[in-house]
Amino acid sequence: MGKLLIVGTVAFDAIETPFGKTEKILGGAATYIGLSASYFGLESGIISVVGGDFPVRYLDMLSDKNIDLEGVEVIKEGKTFFWSGKYDYNLNTRETLVTDLNVLAEFNPVVPENFMDCDFLMLGNLHPLVQMSVINQIPERPKLVVLDTMNFWMDNTMDELHQVIAKVDVITINDEEARQLSGEYSLVKAAQKIHKMGPQYVVIKKGENGALLFNNGDVFFAPALPLEDIFDPTGAGDTFAGGFIGYLASSHDVSFENMKRAVIYGSNFASFCVEKFGTERMQNLSQNEIQARLKEFKQLTQFDIELTH
Amino acid sequence: MGKLLIVGTVAFDAIETPFGKTEKILGGAATYIGLSASYFGLESGIISVVGGDFPVRYLDMLSDKNIDLEGVEVIKEGKTFFWSGKYDYNLNTRETLVTDLNVLAEFNPVVPENFMDCDFLMLGNLHPLVQMSVINQIPERPKLVVLDTMNFWMDNTMDELHQVIAKVDVITINDEEARQLSGEYSLVKAAQKIHKMGPQYVVIKKGENGALLFNNGDVFFAPALPLEDIFDPTGAGDTFAGGFIGYLASSHDVSFENMKRAVIYGSNFASFCVEKFGTERMQNLSQNEIQARLKEFKQLTQFDIELTH
Image (tube, rainbow over all chains, first blue to last red; front, side, top):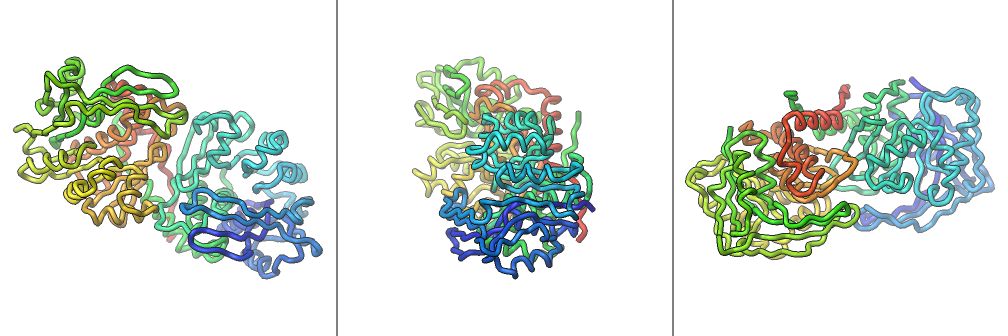
């Protein structure tokens, strides 16, 4: 069993989809990553920051999942990061209505003593300088460092982002971000260019069209599970990342063959995440449900063709 | 080995992509379907119509692939169906520049005597009344009837189209067409509604995002092979259909497990088709190339996860 450290936002989200609307609910990249990874029963901790307005019951819920919160700073006089967004009718595009950075604006991550020897590090979507600060605080390089980022940092802090990208083993981005980062439309060519920036593994997320894992010449594809209804896509990418690194940390094996399984586990958790608003579905999954859906993934993708040459 | 009958266009295409432009070259749904199915070494024939301007060397090339052309009527004083289209920079959308129906306007398909006992019937994209006429000429229902169609017929001849759909075992359409036909955005729900129209199997093609095979509760997904460059998408859907029905006819097995393999074969051939203009790549494939790429499909999609429940 590996020891997993996650840095990312713990936040309030207010979400509007064609199916309904929420008040401020629990959100944030580290929340989704932590919940998803928690199903592997490993030692994990979050580094983040919240305000005095953040409900203790949310922190208790995460603690109950065996997620260490020593690295979550509570700034009593501050307010928690708040994001609000609205999805269009087919859930493929969303509009950001509000982004209140609040306590996140001055976020200064501090790695707890107990996680100085973490061997799996997940850098959730944040300012590249915050991500770099965490890398720099850990004395011995972890076995695997996974970076998630987004177009906002490419638009505004590309130099700092490139410095972080150069230091990680895996980058997870969506297809449009891969194109923006590489300047290539073909995702095969985009992955080739991104490999040269540093990461040995490139994961390109395509939402309802699945995810690609590139490792130089090799490529693996995991579809998204076809669902009757997608209720709320918020957090699906972070949930994917949490399932991916959580599986790798629990098996302590970072071979390409094992990364294939990790991508399937990530897709599996993401398929649950989108079934309800926010983190609701991810708070209470049973191992039976997880295994039953893995079986669906096998039926969806596995075939036997004998090769004659 | 089954006997495969294909009805569809044999045509001239003029294609413009970001990578180049062709004069009138060989095209047409039945041409792509026939070429793709020809690699299975089965008995196959085409029903179509061309004009006196259609080069004998094109017909010879198809005959050399063991495709029976007795059902291809040549109207000496007529001109061959001509389509011209232009793709945008990322090849995802195309504009039709010219559609000259010519001899196709009066197409009256006649099933050759030798194919009255065909056991696999592929209805390529054509007016639903032409497709229905072929169904009605065959005295004993074939083992499997596959229908391809497009949004044009949904816009203009929906009643006639529904009558044909009610008579087939498999329908192949793209994602937007599945949504239009069913009125459902979710492809899972769309497939459920289309099942109720008749077809036991629904294949939804998503271009570079792969293809889904639905059989009531069961679903299988085949990705498109990630390629460095896509040169010309023309004919990819027909090539997919030809590989799909060609494999089924050659193995004479229409179980769901075998249809999974057929979808992979279809995707395999489509991945070759898009590598060059028109039918060029599909005219000269070796069994080694086909098998090598099937191996790539296996590496792309196969994983081993042991289920614990």
